[in-house]
Image (cartoon, rainbow, N blue to C red):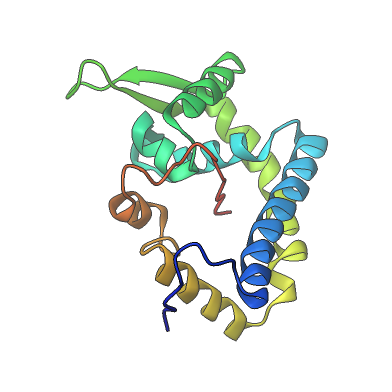
Length: 179
């Protein structure tokens, strides 16, 4: 399955098409979904993703480092996003009792309300722009490819946090909202 590339060799046309296609599709889908949520609910996609992850977490809270890995943001990017969500009253922070330096991000009732308002818009967009264009076999193959490339990437968020290396959130900061 794996190819033996020549060091310094240019990508073949099929390699370049696969790589560029992946980057362009991810970027296009993110921009479209972000624009829809922002226009309909004044809630950017990354904010939606944070609210969703917190809603699904035990006690509606996650450590900032875990949240950063799950949303695929750098630690500083996550801090800025949570700062903004906290100013908007959508999340709060609690000090981690096990680690006096660490914090949990905690979903507020207002954050949960905003998440519920935006969920139907987001899911309709995911279906229209992505899922409805693929059949069940396509989806199964794609999930297998994602796991081949990055083990754990197609699993649940909790599985991803366990499997993802601490460096899974590079400076490029790509998103992966689940639902």
